[in-house]
Amino acid sequence: MKGKIKVSVENRFISFKLTLERNITVITGDSGTGKTKLINMVRGFAELGKSSGVTLKCDKPCVVLEDVNYWETVLENTHESVVFVEESTRFITSHKFAAMVNASDNYYVLITREPLHQLSYSIDAIKQIRKNDKKPKIENIYKNISKKDIADFPYDLVIVEDSQTGFQFYTKATENAGLQCITSNGKSGITALLKESKAKKILVIADAAALGDEIASLIYFKENTEAKVDFFLPESFEWLVLRSAIFNGNAEVQEILANPVDYIECQEFPSWEKFFTAELVRQTKGKFNLQYPQNKSRLPSGYLNESNIDKILDAMKEVN
Amino acid sequence: MLKIYFGSHKDEIYNTDLYYSNQYDKMWVMDDFAKRIIADIDDSEVVAPDMIKNNIFGMFDSKNLSAGVKTLLLIYNNPKLICNISNCGDNCAKYILEMAENRDITVCLHHLMDFGKNFSVKVINDRRRKVISEPLEYLALAHHYLRGNSDEGEN
Image 1: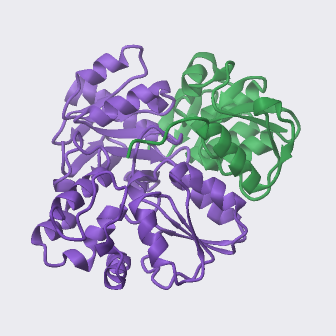
Image 2: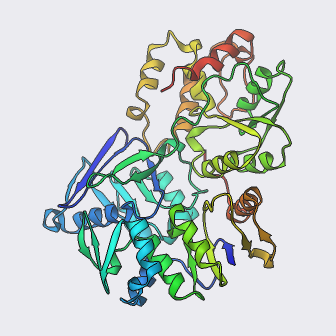
């Protein structure tokens, strides 16, 4: 399944509108905002259709995956659907559920406050319901939290979540900035490094596409530390490279970047990071000094010259 | 004192919503504390036992309160229960601390709840007993116990 999926659910009292752009959407936030009501309305319509009194409009079937001991069988037989999972559902944090989500052709709306470490989901897919009388708004929680221009690197410490090509790039990009650039060897190591650090100005660089389970901890740290902490959160390093002026003349890349949701088949690419890596590999195949390795072990030297470093660092400036 | 166990506990009421539906007392909502949290969190007014009024939904019974309010009512009326407070949003945090001011309450927490800048809790995993009042220490313990040995999401 790919593309934007719009879901509209309403009854006599309340209506919800939700646009899904990725395979995983997480709805979290305060109590009393209507999360359970949303699920109950979807459940009512899924079981009884219009006779439930609920009106549900969506191009795909919408179902609620219940916390029953045969949930795996239900999910195995659910395809091309929007699958809702409600709060307090035990299997939501399990390896098995994550494996089935990653292999499936469904979109998922997961209502939970628990960080889902087994799944790779974007900070842009984390939403909350804001009370608004009969028409609550479902909106992104983490808006405008990323810096767009970091070229001058006014920091003492740069923590890069990536340990391979991305880290090689930022190490080179910061080598004359008089700061320390280290890798956290994955997103789960960022918080510990922040806690240990004595630096006063810190920049954290990570892939927004997969940071969903860590972002609450990082924001909490930023709000409770005396250090100045900024985030630079491109979709992924490969996305940043594709967005850079290096690919300005490539119409196909520009078209994909303008509307990635129309190109990313969720069963093949459960995370957008995987898609952009595959795309960068495809677009640079056979190109001298730019051929991007699938295993991301070594960044080609073409990305490490001064001109291309500037182009890549500038690539976030125009992002909305 | 609020005692927090990060992660799953063998005596935990994980699905507090289900437990509430099977164990609630219709008089619970008549208490002043209950009326206060129902007004604040669910924007609703208690009219009579098991009868609550909301400007959008009209009259409804206690089973249709939010999961957060139901969890708070369970703790308030059964302080020995170990409830999963990840069914509560951050707008419930101050009430959880308030309930724990004069009595010991043990809860399970599966996410990083924001208790604000001023709080004192005990994290009791691994038989810890130290009182935590420092947000970054609380964060480090939450991260340690909730992350556990779990794998990274597949990239």
